[in-house]
Image (cartoon, rainbow, N blue to C red; front, side, top):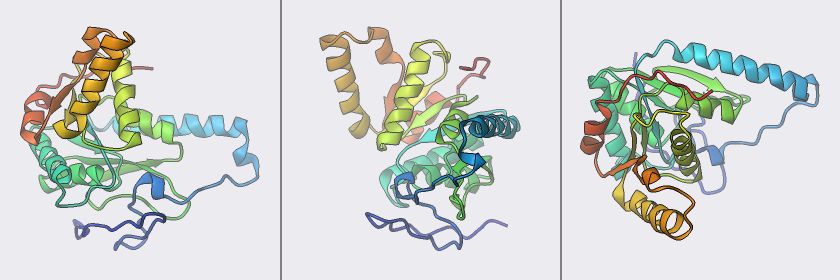
Length: 254
């Protein structure tokens, strides 16, 4: 049975709060409580190596059940009714109607919007979340989920096997993920046939201008071809026209 959709959350500026769903802390990652390892063998370097291996195996095994996915990135702070929340929600629905599964980080904002669109359209709505010591951090529209202790393993899994990547406006995490994906394509660790779509011209065009004018023309730290690694659009419909033809993945970057 589908859970009752959450009403938009109001997140205080300096502290995390519980959402209306008991036991769920569906807030931006920067608002999550700090977690320290116990002072025992679990904090040792050797044991962490095994924990990392275990998370990698579990993550790859989980994702093996989903053959055709597209990963959404974007701010965790957008609420239902915001422009980019609603565009992500619309795009999620359009993609699952085309046979894609939608993968997100499983939290609020753009993640919740993509999962909501996918869930409402009856498709695969997948969340790759963060493990917390007591609470779960999963939005109510995720239908298949797993969680990770290590942020970098979770980040790898969000990139693994996706047929395309969609970036909505976001903060430092979104920019980090965007530039990492572009670097992997630039260095031929990911095929340049995999679409990278940036949704929101108001947000992404100034970044594109900086990349073009400063990195390429002024400092010459990138090639002209690197400016073509991504496409900037303004609507879910424009994004869908690019994403619907995303090719199957037969290359991976590890």
